[in-house]
Length: 395
Image 1 (cartoon, rainbow, N blue to C red):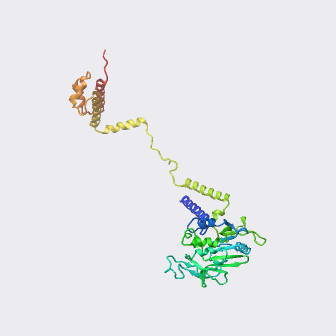
Image 2: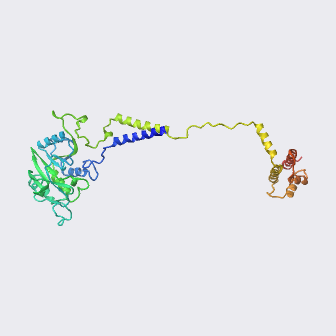
Image 3: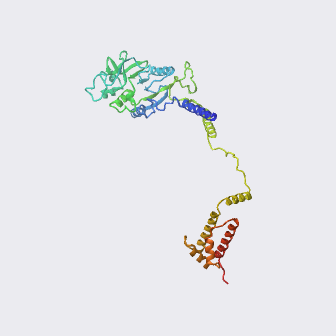
């Protein structure tokens, strides 16, 4: 019972360590530019590479050679967000599709499908382009090919204070643009239209190219939702690789953070526990020593058998002797089983010097009174057997 309890406790501990090690691992991060899942953004990256000069997926804040940065999901730390803001001030164009990002303006309304009641005039719900100031800006004329945007679970931004707006009216716009320093920020009311599953819906792909590729020869950077902030004099290092993340952010779990040697230690512990469990588990084990029966000498066994034979009826012993004698004669003479005593006696007499009457008398002997009679009968049967069955030589 104690061993079983120890095995149970050890198993629970091992399972707990495995769960802790793999807890928090997110193998399919939504809007990940490398993900091919329905909610990933790998399709957007491939689409932009068909229309732009250079498209790069960034793990850190882009450099000055990047013209447009695309942020689909904002999980930036304060220092990374500050570095990205300085990049915009230096002349970069940032396209943000996360309504929760601090880079977007105030939200005025949450949009359900067909927010403006246009479902009676169109086959699919969405938002009409309306008055679009972005069409007048250089590089965004492609929006003229997008009369309507099919959206779901998105928001509208307040166009007040924006330099340009599109897809909406004075009450709220799906796309707004405002200048920041030497650059600009384009806020989109949601990134669902740019996912792998929705990119080919209606004109979503056309909208993506029109907003994100203002210059076909330009350089575009697709940003991950967590970035490494560049080190400056007022930015402290945050650890190996200076990966600046908020607690709980990212897709790495505890097992990913463990050094290699510690992983081997954990594996060794698991193997050791398995070996221990196999050694202590229920099994047949070594043979159990049991008391042996009392050994009886050979002569004592013969005497005991003789005493038992005396107690039984002699007729049983006589019948066994004659039955064995008859069977040997039938086999030796080639007689068929069940042959009569008279015929068997005649065959035996023809093969020996013994009279058929003597053989018949031996076959029909049934009464023996004592042990001496049994011995005499056995001897007589042996003489007849030897005389009948022993091959004779001719001279």
